[in-house]
Length: 344
Ligand code: 11C
Image 1 (spheres, rainbow, N blue to C red):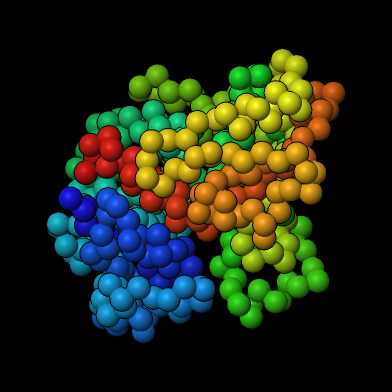
Image 2: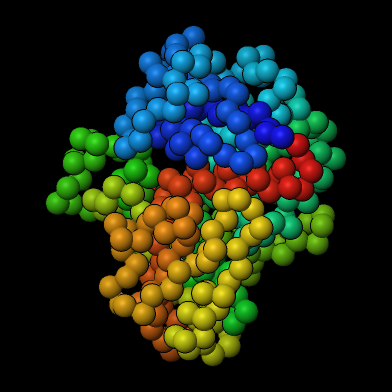
Protein backbone atom coordinates (compact mmCIF):
# COMPACT_ATOMS: atom_id res chain seq x y z
CA UNK A 1 0.00 0.00 0.00
CA UNK A 2 1.22 3.48 -0.83
CA UNK A 3 2.22 5.77 2.05
CA UNK A 4 0.73 9.27 1.76
CA UNK A 5 3.49 11.89 1.86
CA UNK A 6 3.76 15.66 1.97
CA UNK A 7 6.39 17.96 0.47
CA UNK A 8 7.34 21.01 2.54
CA UNK A 9 8.73 23.80 0.39
CA UNK A 10 7.26 22.19 -2.71
CA UNK A 11 7.59 25.21 -5.01
CA UNK A 12 11.41 25.59 -4.78
CA UNK A 13 14.04 23.90 -6.95
CA UNK A 14 14.49 20.88 -4.64
CA UNK A 15 10.73 20.76 -3.95
CA UNK A 16 10.14 20.43 -7.69
CA UNK A 17 12.69 17.62 -7.88
CA UNK A 18 10.83 15.88 -5.03
CA UNK A 19 7.61 16.12 -7.06
CA UNK A 20 9.41 14.70 -10.10
CA UNK A 21 10.86 11.75 -8.15
CA UNK A 22 7.62 10.96 -6.30
CA UNK A 23 5.37 10.86 -9.33
CA UNK A 24 5.30 7.95 -9.55
CA UNK A 25 7.10 6.17 -6.68
CA UNK A 26 6.63 2.50 -5.67
CA UNK A 27 6.06 3.25 -1.93
CA UNK A 28 4.84 6.85 -1.74
CA UNK A 29 2.02 8.99 -3.09
CA UNK A 30 1.96 12.80 -2.90
CA UNK A 31 -0.96 13.92 -0.70
CA UNK A 32 0.03 17.41 0.47
CA UNK A 33 2.19 20.28 -0.77
CA UNK A 34 3.24 23.26 1.33
CA UNK A 35 5.03 26.52 0.66
CA UNK A 36 5.18 30.06 2.03
CA UNK A 37 2.08 32.03 3.07
CA UNK A 38 2.29 33.87 -0.27
CA UNK A 39 1.67 30.61 -2.17
CA UNK A 40 -0.90 29.09 0.20
CA UNK A 41 -4.34 28.70 -1.35
CA UNK A 42 -3.05 28.74 -4.94
CA UNK A 43 -2.89 25.73 -7.24
CA UNK A 44 0.54 24.09 -7.46
CA UNK A 45 0.63 24.93 -11.17
CA UNK A 46 0.19 28.63 -10.36
CA UNK A 47 2.44 28.70 -7.28
CA UNK A 48 5.49 26.79 -8.56
CA UNK A 49 7.90 28.77 -10.72
CA UNK A 50 8.46 25.71 -12.83
CA UNK A 51 11.95 25.95 -14.25
CA UNK A 52 12.94 22.32 -14.80
CA UNK A 53 12.89 20.36 -18.03
CA UNK A 54 9.93 18.08 -17.25
CA UNK A 55 6.17 18.78 -17.19
CA UNK A 56 4.25 19.37 -13.94
CA UNK A 57 2.62 16.00 -13.23
CA UNK A 58 -1.21 16.03 -13.67
CA UNK A 59 -1.61 14.47 -10.21
CA UNK A 60 -0.33 17.62 -8.49
CA UNK A 61 -0.96 20.45 -10.97
CA UNK A 62 -4.34 21.41 -9.49
CA UNK A 63 -3.52 20.46 -5.88
CA UNK A 64 -3.96 23.42 -3.53
CA UNK A 65 -0.74 24.51 -1.86
CA UNK A 66 -0.98 24.74 1.96
CA UNK A 67 0.88 26.91 4.45
CA UNK A 68 3.78 25.09 6.15
CA UNK A 69 2.03 24.58 9.47
CA UNK A 70 1.15 21.46 11.48
CA UNK A 71 -2.53 22.51 11.56
CA UNK A 72 -2.63 22.55 7.76
CA UNK A 73 -1.22 19.06 7.19
CA UNK A 74 -3.70 16.15 7.33
CA UNK A 75 -3.10 13.55 10.07
CA UNK A 76 -3.17 10.72 7.53
CA UNK A 77 0.02 12.04 5.87
CA UNK A 78 2.65 10.49 8.14
CA UNK A 79 5.81 11.28 6.15
CA UNK A 80 6.95 14.78 5.18
CA UNK A 81 9.84 15.51 2.84
CA UNK A 82 11.28 18.90 3.73
CA UNK A 83 13.15 21.17 1.34
CA UNK A 84 12.47 24.31 3.34
CA UNK A 85 15.00 27.13 3.58
CA UNK A 86 17.05 26.34 6.70
CA UNK A 87 15.67 29.24 8.78
CA UNK A 88 12.10 28.02 8.07
CA UNK A 89 13.10 24.39 8.67
CA UNK A 90 14.58 25.37 12.02
CA UNK A 91 11.34 27.11 12.98
CA UNK A 92 8.83 24.44 11.91
CA UNK A 93 10.46 20.99 11.69
CA UNK A 94 10.76 20.30 15.46
CA UNK A 95 7.08 21.23 15.94
CA UNK A 96 6.04 18.86 13.16
CA UNK A 97 8.09 16.02 14.67
CA UNK A 98 6.59 16.77 18.07
CA UNK A 99 3.10 16.68 16.52
CA UNK A 100 3.77 13.13 15.30
CA UNK A 101 4.97 13.57 11.72
CA UNK A 102 8.09 11.80 10.50
CA UNK A 103 10.20 14.42 8.70
CA UNK A 104 12.87 13.43 6.18
CA UNK A 105 14.64 16.72 5.67
CA UNK A 106 17.12 18.14 3.19
CA UNK A 107 17.25 21.50 5.02
CA UNK A 108 20.64 22.33 6.49
CA UNK A 109 19.41 23.18 10.02
CA UNK A 110 20.05 20.66 12.83
CA UNK A 111 22.28 18.37 10.74
CA UNK A 112 24.93 18.34 13.46
CA UNK A 113 22.52 18.03 16.43
CA UNK A 114 23.73 15.01 18.43
CA UNK A 115 20.29 13.35 18.55
CA UNK A 116 19.31 14.05 14.93
CA UNK A 117 20.51 11.27 12.62
CA UNK A 118 22.32 12.42 9.48
CA UNK A 119 22.06 9.52 7.06
CA UNK A 120 23.11 8.23 3.65
CA UNK A 121 21.47 4.75 3.67
CA UNK A 122 24.33 3.07 1.80
CA UNK A 123 26.85 4.47 4.31
CA UNK A 124 25.38 4.68 7.82
CA UNK A 125 21.84 3.26 7.92
CA UNK A 126 22.56 2.10 11.50
CA UNK A 127 22.57 5.75 12.65
CA UNK A 128 18.77 5.66 12.19
CA UNK A 129 18.62 4.10 15.68
CA UNK A 130 19.47 7.56 16.98
CA UNK A 131 15.75 8.23 16.49
CA UNK A 132 15.12 6.18 19.62
CA UNK A 133 17.44 8.52 21.55
CA UNK A 134 15.66 11.46 19.91
CA UNK A 135 12.25 10.17 21.07
CA UNK A 136 13.53 9.59 24.61
CA UNK A 137 15.33 12.93 24.88
CA UNK A 138 12.78 15.13 23.15
CA UNK A 139 9.56 13.22 23.84
CA UNK A 140 8.47 13.50 20.20
CA UNK A 141 5.81 11.18 18.74
CA UNK A 142 7.27 11.78 15.30
CA UNK A 143 10.89 12.02 14.18
CA UNK A 144 13.39 14.24 12.38
CA UNK A 145 15.96 12.70 10.04
CA UNK A 146 18.42 14.66 7.88
CA UNK A 147 20.33 14.04 4.70
CA UNK A 148 23.65 15.86 4.22
CA UNK A 149 24.60 18.74 1.97
CA UNK A 150 24.98 17.83 -1.73
CA UNK A 151 28.75 18.33 -1.87
CA UNK A 152 29.13 16.09 1.21
CA UNK A 153 26.95 13.35 -0.30
CA UNK A 154 29.11 13.34 -3.43
CA UNK A 155 32.31 12.63 -1.52
CA UNK A 156 31.29 10.54 1.48
CA UNK A 157 30.38 7.25 -0.29
CA UNK A 158 33.86 7.27 -1.86
CA UNK A 159 35.43 7.90 1.56
CA UNK A 160 33.31 5.13 3.10
CA UNK A 161 34.83 2.78 0.51
CA UNK A 162 38.36 3.95 1.37
CA UNK A 163 37.96 3.83 5.15
CA UNK A 164 39.16 0.21 5.19
CA UNK A 165 42.64 1.69 4.52
CA UNK A 166 42.37 3.93 7.60
CA UNK A 167 41.41 7.48 6.62
CA UNK A 168 43.54 10.05 8.43
CA UNK A 169 43.18 13.28 6.44
CA UNK A 170 40.97 14.41 3.57
CA UNK A 171 41.45 17.53 1.49
CA UNK A 172 38.77 18.40 -1.04
CA UNK A 173 38.31 21.19 -3.57
CA UNK A 174 34.89 21.42 -5.21
CA UNK A 175 33.55 22.68 -8.54
CA UNK A 176 29.86 23.11 -7.80
CA UNK A 177 26.95 23.61 -10.19
CA UNK A 178 24.79 26.72 -10.13
CA UNK A 179 21.60 24.76 -9.33
CA UNK A 180 23.04 24.22 -5.83
CA UNK A 181 22.55 27.94 -5.24
CA UNK A 182 19.03 27.84 -6.64
CA UNK A 183 20.07 29.49 -9.89
CA UNK A 184 18.07 28.43 -12.91
CA UNK A 185 17.74 29.33 -16.58
CA UNK A 186 18.68 32.89 -17.42
CA UNK A 187 19.98 33.72 -13.92
CA UNK A 188 22.63 31.03 -14.19
CA UNK A 189 24.09 32.91 -17.17
CA UNK A 190 25.29 35.49 -14.64
CA UNK A 191 28.26 33.30 -13.84
CA UNK A 192 29.11 32.30 -17.42
CA UNK A 193 32.81 32.97 -18.12
CA UNK A 194 33.41 33.06 -14.39
CA UNK A 195 34.02 31.01 -11.25
CA UNK A 196 33.32 32.06 -7.68
CA UNK A 197 35.97 30.82 -5.21
CA UNK A 198 33.68 30.80 -2.18
CA UNK A 199 30.32 29.29 -1.14
CA UNK A 200 29.18 30.58 2.25
CA UNK A 201 29.24 27.92 4.96
CA UNK A 202 29.89 25.08 2.51
CA UNK A 203 33.43 24.27 3.69
CA UNK A 204 32.31 23.81 7.30
CA UNK A 205 29.37 21.63 6.21
CA UNK A 206 31.67 19.28 4.28
CA UNK A 207 34.17 19.13 7.14
CA UNK A 208 31.64 18.49 9.91
CA UNK A 209 29.00 16.38 8.15
CA UNK A 210 31.59 13.95 6.70
CA UNK A 211 32.91 13.18 10.18
CA UNK A 212 29.39 12.64 11.54
CA UNK A 213 28.37 10.36 8.65
CA UNK A 214 31.46 8.19 9.01
CA UNK A 215 31.41 8.31 12.80
CA UNK A 216 30.93 5.31 15.05
CA UNK A 217 27.58 4.69 16.77
CA UNK A 218 27.13 2.29 19.67
CA UNK A 219 23.32 2.45 19.69
CA UNK A 220 23.23 5.37 22.12
CA UNK A 221 26.03 7.81 21.35
CA UNK A 222 27.68 8.95 18.18
CA UNK A 223 31.43 9.64 17.88
CA UNK A 224 32.64 11.81 15.02
CA UNK A 225 35.22 10.10 12.76
CA UNK A 226 38.76 11.03 13.81
CA UNK A 227 39.98 12.07 10.33
CA UNK A 228 40.82 15.71 9.58
CA UNK A 229 38.74 17.11 6.72
CA UNK A 230 39.65 20.33 4.97
CA UNK A 231 37.47 21.72 2.16
CA UNK A 232 37.60 24.56 -0.35
CA UNK A 233 34.35 25.13 -2.25
CA UNK A 234 33.94 26.86 -5.60
CA UNK A 235 31.02 27.69 -7.88
CA UNK A 236 31.49 27.12 -11.63
CA UNK A 237 29.22 27.63 -14.64
CA UNK A 238 27.77 24.10 -14.73
CA UNK A 239 23.99 23.70 -14.48
CA UNK A 240 23.81 20.41 -12.52
CA UNK A 241 26.43 18.08 -11.04
CA UNK A 242 29.07 18.80 -8.40
CA UNK A 243 32.62 17.69 -9.33
CA UNK A 244 35.15 17.35 -6.51
CA UNK A 245 38.94 16.81 -6.33
CA UNK A 246 39.76 14.72 -3.27
CA UNK A 247 43.08 13.91 -1.59
CA UNK A 248 42.63 11.06 0.89
CA UNK A 249 45.56 10.27 3.21
CA UNK A 250 45.42 6.80 4.70
CA UNK A 251 47.22 4.92 7.47
CA UNK A 252 47.77 1.89 5.24
CA UNK A 253 49.20 1.82 1.73
CA UNK A 254 46.62 2.21 -1.00
CA UNK A 255 47.19 1.81 -4.74
CA UNK A 256 45.11 3.35 -7.51
CA UNK A 257 43.83 -0.15 -8.32
CA UNK A 258 42.84 -0.98 -4.75
CA UNK A 259 41.13 2.40 -4.30
CA UNK A 260 39.13 2.04 -7.54
CA UNK A 261 38.25 -1.56 -6.70
CA UNK A 262 37.05 -0.63 -3.20
CA UNK A 263 34.76 2.01 -4.69
CA UNK A 264 33.45 -0.18 -7.53
CA UNK A 265 32.64 -2.94 -5.00
CA UNK A 266 31.01 -0.63 -2.46
CA UNK A 267 27.48 -1.98 -1.88
CA UNK A 268 24.16 -0.34 -2.70
CA UNK A 269 21.28 -0.38 -0.21
CA UNK A 270 18.29 -2.65 -0.74
CA UNK A 271 15.96 0.32 -1.31
CA UNK A 272 14.08 1.37 -4.47
CA UNK A 273 16.14 4.54 -5.07
CA UNK A 274 19.59 3.09 -4.36
CA UNK A 275 21.34 2.40 -7.68
CA UNK A 276 23.54 -0.59 -8.47
CA UNK A 277 26.38 0.03 -8.79
CA UNK A 278 26.42 2.91 -6.32
CA UNK A 279 29.87 4.12 -7.44
CA UNK A 280 30.93 4.06 -11.10
CA UNK A 281 34.69 4.14 -11.58
CA UNK A 282 36.49 5.36 -14.70
CA UNK A 283 39.96 4.70 -16.07
CA UNK A 284 39.66 7.56 -18.60
CA UNK A 285 41.35 10.48 -16.77
CA UNK A 286 38.84 12.93 -18.29
CA UNK A 287 35.90 11.30 -16.48
CA UNK A 288 33.73 11.81 -14.56
CA UNK A 289 32.28 14.96 -16.11
CA UNK A 290 29.00 16.62 -15.09
CA UNK A 291 27.26 16.52 -18.47
CA UNK A 292 28.31 12.96 -19.29
CA UNK A 293 27.94 11.30 -15.90
CA UNK A 294 25.50 13.14 -13.62
CA UNK A 295 22.52 11.00 -14.75
CA UNK A 296 24.17 7.62 -14.10
CA UNK A 297 21.87 5.45 -11.99
CA UNK A 298 18.97 7.83 -12.79
CA UNK A 299 20.91 10.63 -11.13
CA UNK A 300 21.45 8.64 -7.92
CA UNK A 301 24.93 7.20 -8.59
CA UNK A 302 28.30 8.65 -7.61
CA UNK A 303 31.18 8.56 -10.12
CA UNK A 304 34.90 8.52 -9.46
CA UNK A 305 38.02 8.62 -11.63
CA UNK A 306 41.41 10.20 -12.17
CA UNK A 307 43.00 7.97 -9.51
CA UNK A 308 46.63 8.83 -8.68
CA UNK A 309 48.85 7.62 -5.90
CA UNK A 310 50.25 10.30 -3.59
CA UNK A 311 52.96 9.93 -0.92
CA UNK A 312 50.22 9.81 1.75
CA UNK A 313 47.41 7.98 -0.01
CA UNK A 314 45.35 8.55 -3.13
CA UNK A 315 43.98 11.47 -5.12
CA UNK A 316 40.85 11.20 -7.28
CA UNK A 317 37.85 13.11 -8.64
CA UNK A 318 34.21 12.37 -7.83
CA UNK A 319 30.85 13.60 -9.07
CA UNK A 320 27.13 13.33 -8.41
CA UNK A 321 23.93 15.08 -9.46
CA UNK A 322 23.50 17.70 -6.74
CA UNK A 323 19.70 18.09 -6.78
CA UNK A 324 18.95 14.35 -7.33
CA UNK A 325 21.49 12.23 -5.36
CA UNK A 326 22.54 15.36 -3.47
CA UNK A 327 19.14 16.62 -2.30
CA UNK A 328 15.66 15.43 -3.34
CA UNK A 329 16.73 11.85 -4.09
CA UNK A 330 18.68 11.72 -0.83
CA UNK A 331 15.58 12.68 1.20
CA UNK A 332 13.44 10.13 -0.61
CA UNK A 333 16.05 7.41 -0.05
CA UNK A 334 15.94 8.25 3.67
CA UNK A 335 12.12 8.05 3.51
CA UNK A 336 12.43 4.57 1.98
CA UNK A 337 14.76 3.59 4.83
CA UNK A 338 12.29 4.95 7.43
CA UNK A 339 9.50 2.91 5.82
CA UNK A 340 11.61 -0.26 5.71
CA UNK A 341 12.68 0.12 9.33
CA UNK A 342 9.09 0.53 10.57
CA UNK A 343 9.08 4.21 11.47
CA UNK A 344 5.90 4.86 9.41
C1 11C B 1 25.37 24.60 -2.94
N1 11C B 1 25.59 22.68 -1.52
O1 11C B 1 25.74 23.93 -3.92
C2 11C B 1 24.91 23.95 -1.68
C3 11C B 1 23.40 23.83 -1.70
O2 11C B 1 23.30 22.58 2.84
O3 11C B 1 21.77 21.65 1.65
C4 11C B 1 22.82 22.95 -0.62
C5 11C B 1 22.88 23.56 0.75
C6 11C B 1 22.62 22.52 1.83
O4 11C B 1 25.33 25.84 -2.95
